Length: 472
Image (cartoon, rainbow, N blue to C red):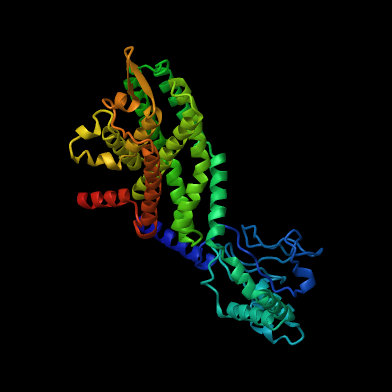
């Protein structure tokens, strides 16, 4: 019984191989071929919307069991199931005779070159279903070479080459000189693009503006109604410290937008469309209008709600001082973002730096009383909170006089001496503003060094790679 089943299986496999010709059935339909005499007018139409095969004689002809992708013809198929041949003969004997036609097609002297090429293209299907040309035989290669030679020797090829030559040579030197923009043009374009992006993307500065206004309203209502007596000095010093410190801390919300700008810069720099200097200058100029808008709106709310001195010059200094503070904070965030290039690590680092600067700013403990190593040098001197708060307090209390009893009065410098360390010179507040301006440019110089000569990979990526190596 087993031997009988085994013989049945073997005979079945032999029949399949014989009738299938030892070939796999492709997943899609197979184009059919035919030896019908073809002409250019009846077969080829370059418009893809029209039919390629036309005429009343076109009828069905396809391998048994398949619907081919190519246009049908009127011929009867005598081939097995998976055959790709299509016969125009009336019987199998005439079909076998037709199989020898392709070898003698090129010897037909009565045919034109275009008709001969079309016969070759029609007979040979040079691509399989996956677009692979590896199965192309010698006859197909001859057809391809014939097509190439026919095109190269035609008048169309000569006209195309002439047109290309004229287009490439027309004002070549002037076009090359005009194609590279100067540094000033790139800075102007990048500044304008930054302005457009920042104005359209609400997460860049509009959200920060809303957050700053909310924070300032909370601080203003908390410290409102202080008056101008001597007892209000300590509370007003605390109000100025809270405003500068927490407003700077709130600026960390702009880290995602800065990281996006750095990512765009890296993409443009890799294509040689931008440089580190152009990027920094464009980003700096583009951020100035929005930072100034934040500074003037927040400063006006805080200034009048807390009840500082009613003087336009003092108000303008307050606005400019806070604006410089925002510029310094923006440069600090940009430098940290360039080092890490990761939202989590950049935010964590900036929060830590801001906390240290707040502790060393001189409010919790006067700077003269701070420990000399580490807290005074360098923390108290590298903290921009120190210069901003000192300048604002000097702007408010230098020249102010407070009455002590009925016959005695003290200056504002003496009144604030026990709460915050300031200078008695009236020009000291301008020196503090110059220090803030220098720090704003200094941080951007650090950013330039990092982008131009610095890290090719982000530090967080390096730490992650080292961690994976240690675990492995």
